[in-house]
Image (cartoon, rainbow, N blue to C red; front, side, top):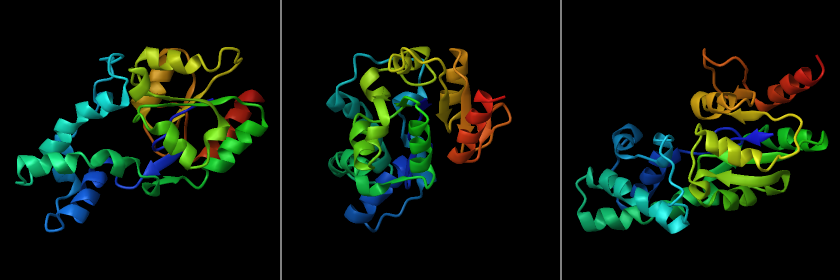
Length: 227
């Protein structure tokens, strides 16, 4: 079982733009931009998944490439360059703060259910270098054989190599599924390399298999196992 993480098993309130707003509330409370006002300035490696970056898998280097985008977002609020740089340096710790991450209500029961049925589980996510620490902090690391984050592999889903890396965790698996909330990165990416995939927590007319929650995922896979 290959799981996406953010939006599938857990979520961060506010995501990236929310992170910047949290910093502004603490550091520059007179500034109150909306998430929509900040979003155009932010770009991440997974916005260009066809461009691998195996040369940028060191955590410091990975975050360094994002700093200019954070700085631009803060500069758009008429802050000085020095102040924008100071605030941008706070994004990493604020985004990764465990207090801002939560599991979905059905995550633990789903992971435990698959574990009890003998499934080997791994995470395959377009995420930050600290993903393993976040998973550990949420108390679910023991469910996974491995945790693959694109920040450490250099390949973002739906790139085929991202899935190839994920499958290395499951060399003897007789059956593999991908579960995720992104119809392109998770679903089409998996299907393009022959992995059946289930879309969760959102609907998309182009996706054949989709479920509202992880309980339905369990039922769907059990039905596939016992036609």
